[in-house]
Each structure stands twice: as C-alpha cells, then as structure tokens.
Length: 102
Length: 487
Image (cartoon, rainbow over all chains, first blue to last red; front, side, top):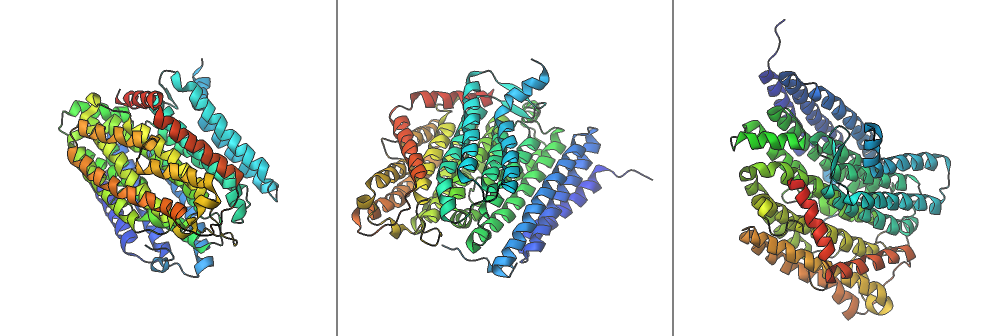
C-alpha cells in the first residue's frame, strides 16, 4: 500500500475545520454547534499527526493525545451545560437565548 | 539541586494551587453542608501562600521548568502577582456574595483554585501547546463557575454562551498552533523566534496563516473587536464574584500569554503583524467605549469597559511590537494590567454587595442613587476606582494611561493614540455617571453589609492611591519584566 503524502492529509484537515467553523456559525441547535466545535478539534489532530509524520518528530502525535484529553474535559462540561440549559429553559435552540441584551 | 526538585521548586505556586483544588474538591464531597469559613480560609490561604512564593522568587534569575514548557522569569512573576491578587480579591468578595445568592457549595472554591492554576500556567508558559492546555484548565473551570448557580436562567445562559464561543476560539487558536508547528517544526516560543530570525523576512505562508489564526484565537480570549460579542452577556449573566475573577485574573492571564507570544516571538517579524494589531486595538477602543456609553446595568457597563481596556492594552502591545528594544516605556503594558486588575477588583467589591432580597443581582445604575449619603465610605471607595478607570489623577489608572499613551506616541503610533484619547474621553462620561447617581440623586440604596468585600475595597483603593502617587518602584519592576521577554 502506498503511503499518503502530507497534502491530502492537510486538505482533509482543512475541509473538516471549515465544516466545523461553518457549523458553529450557521446552526441553531446547541448540540450540533457543540459537535461542530469537536469537528474543529479533530481537524487540528489530523493536522498535528500529518505534520508530525512529515517532520519525523513525535511531538505532533503527543499533542494530538493532549488535544483529545482536553476535548474530553470540554465535552464533559459542555454536555452538562446543555442539560442545565434544557432544565432551565426547555430548549436548546440558540436563538432563544436572549435574556440579556443592550 | 537535582532536576526533579528544581522544577518542583520553580512551579511550586502552580502545584500548590492544583493540589489544594483537589483537596477542596474531595472535602466538598464528604463535608455537607459545607463549613463555609473553613473552605474560604483554606482557599484564601492557598492563594496568599502562592502569592508569597511568587514574590519570594521574583528576584531570582530566569530558568526553565517542565522541559522548557514553562519559563519562570520576571515577566511571568509580574503577571502572576497580578493574577493572584485578582484571585485573592475575588475570593474576598465571594464569601458573603455566594451566601447571599444562596450558593453554598465547596466546589466553588476548588474551581477558583483550578482556574488560578491554569492562569499561572498561562503567564509562565513558553510553549504554544502549554499555553493551550493552561488556557483550557482555566477556561473549563471558569465555564463551570459561571453556571454555579444552577437554577439561575441568566447565569446558565451566560455560561453556555461563554462555553460555546470559548471552545470555538480554542479550536481556532489550536489550528493556528498546528499550522505554526507544521511550518517551523516546533511549538516552543524560543524555537519559533529562532526560525523567524533565520528566515530574514521570508516567512512561509503556512506560518503567516498560523499567526493570523493565533491572533483571532487570542482576540476572542481578551475580548477584542471584532471578537468581543460574548463579553457583555457573559459578564452580565455570571455571578458577580465570578465576573470579578473574569475581569481581573482571566484578563491578566490572557494578556500575559498573548503578550509573551507577540512580544517574545512574533516581534521578530513585526511587519506582518503590526497592521492586524493596529486595527484590532483601534476598533476595540472605539467599540468598547461607545458601547459602554448607553448601558444602564453596571455589570454590562463594566463588560464594555473591559473591552475598551483590552483596546488600550492592545495599543501597548502594538507599540512594543513596532518599537522593540528602543521602546521608551516597555513596562506600560504590565503596569496598566496591574492597575486594571486593582481598579476592577475594587469596583466589583461594591457591585457584589448590590443584591436584592431574593438573592438576585441588582446592579442597575438607579440603585446607586443616594449611596453617597447612606454609605459614604463605600461611595468614596467606588469613586476612587471609577476615577482610576477613567484615567484621572491622582490614581494608578492615571499613571498607567499616561505611560500607555506616551509610549504609543514615542513608538510612532500617533494615530492609535488619538483614537485612544477620543475613547478615553468618552470613558470619562460613563465612569463618572455612577458618581452623579451616588452624590447628586436621592434614593434609598440597599447595600448588603459585607465586611470582607469592604476590606477588599479598602485595600484596592489604598493601593490605587499609593501607586498613583508613588509609581516608581512598580513601574521599574514592570519595565524589567517586559524587558525579560525581549531577551
């Protein structure tokens, strides 16, 4: 099997990242927005691993593990906040979050 | 000294906060109801102890810890002091406040310690990956703190907004780190600086992209325009004691990390950066000050004020970056950050006492009416903080603004200084408006009598006046600290 070069890896990473950004900016459901953020982090992981292989250093692989750990912690807090939001407001639609303005 | 004890000594303040955070978390699970005074005392003691440790090591030469992940130097020490002072004042005002709003949980203190631990990691970090992890340690704790009053709709809404935009900006920042890593093969700040110095202006496009993404990511964190929209809602909705922590510690730590990256590393290649920073600073000063003009809720007003002050600090960053070593007042950034921490801590000590009988925040400006007659000392303290925020003498805020603007002019940033001066003039209006309510209107202001919050107010106002009249030693220290990053 032929090894994949850096460019395709980066291209996939960039597409994933762009999908994540577009998702955060356009979707209305809190859970989908949260999912899009996770997609961005996974795009970062892919880029780290790709660069790491290209550079011949192991750093990028280690960073990817760090990012996963942080993403897990973020998910724990984020999902708890979504539940809290639903308990208080019985909605997870971001447009309804308008108790403060000015 | 063996390497192990070496790094433990260097990072003792950080490890202490993390360890006590864990202890308090475990204690809060077994001791219910929470013995308030014990938890509060332990948390305050820990922060005070780590502040002492930082101050004690302030004179020592810079060294690396954790395999080059942390750089323990004068710059880090200065901002660590600012961060820990902010944390200490936030703790002082939180004890009575949390009781009034009906949140009596030990996790609060544990989370504050975790957040402070993350902030110290940020100010000492000398590696982009370390900056990211410390940033997340801080942010995740603060997201949770915002929602600590679980039945409060507005608090939960603010926590969620903070979380989504915080996570989004972390993702952008991290993608920037990945691009920088790809272009240079390292995430160490000194490594990147060497790479930039060797490239002689011929910077790879991947690195420029990475730098731009870092700028956006940090821009979100310090609430600079156009990435500021989260700040007003989050500041207003979060419990006042948590807002105080955000306006002091979080702000100082984010700027410390931002400053180290911009001054220490990317000033090697200022030409690609200066333009972006310039526009960010100018827009942030304008939008923050104009936005604050029309606010009637004090917490929301302080959110816009925090945006405006982010603009002033960005102006300092921009002028240090362009002028480098020849800069006339290198320390203006660090000095102003410390001043900002103190004046906000004092102002929030008063805001935290503005709760109604249901335990909800009541921070509408009307509720200040008549405060000057009923509580003259509190009114005087708040007035000193507001005068300092407005940048009028004889306070630390005046000295800070003076150095900031003279530094900007000295570095050739005349346009930026003019924009800032226009903004600061608007600032005088909205900072003095609460004073008109306090002294020139009649009313029956209801203020919780919170002894510890008043102690915090007394200390901050005393420091603001003392450093306003005798800024010499602090200014020298601030100067030396920023110089230590320039290398």
